[in-house]
Length: 262
Image (tube, rainbow, N blue to C red; front, side, top):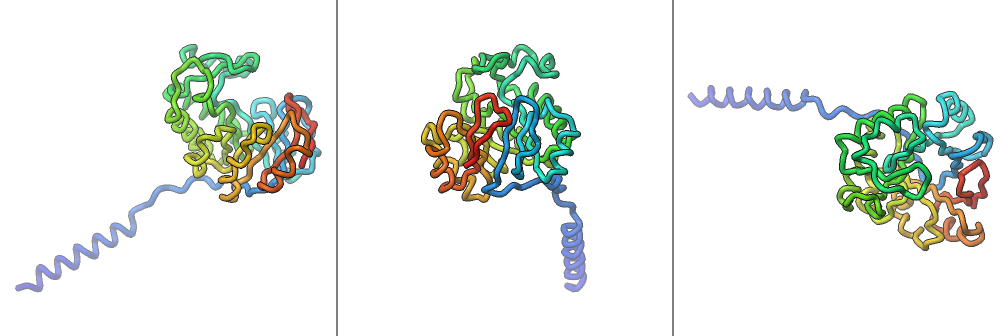
């Protein structure tokens, strides 16, 4: 009389195992570029693009350049990063009128730019998704989202570190969901929390402010730190940059074609 319960129990166990084995897991996201530490780069956001710099990575403005420019750089063996401002509004962009006045804060020091209220992800997420879609549609390999440390500035909004972490992770997810790598721009204080969310770092003037050592978690994780200085000489910052493994160069503030690498 005990055989029937045992048989039923065995059948139930087999059915459970088969169901578990066939249950679909989470769908993998698109494969993306995963840059490695030490890659040289060119960063040009103004002037006529010079595509001839012999480096493996270019960082250029996502709005200003068509897909043909990205394709040309690819033919030259370059990976191409799409520069976008994700933390500040720019009055000269073609989508500027899509941003409601309620999310526009104080100026960020650049003409025509104002900080965004990054707490309003209900309004900003679709706008940023559309911008990152543009990068993907043009064939870019990665995104450089700028103005990602508003919480440490006078934005006109009571932004907190938690607000910034949530927003930065949102931008990283939007990029990754579209198969694009993404870089953490400046925001040194939050590197420990955001290291796993970003594929590289972009930094300005860490040598001038004696902060380059704070970027080493990216290097230790095998991820590049694309670094630029403006006011020092290469003799002043390159020895430390090389020792730390940063991808460093001297640029002018207008970020034209001119560069001097370490």
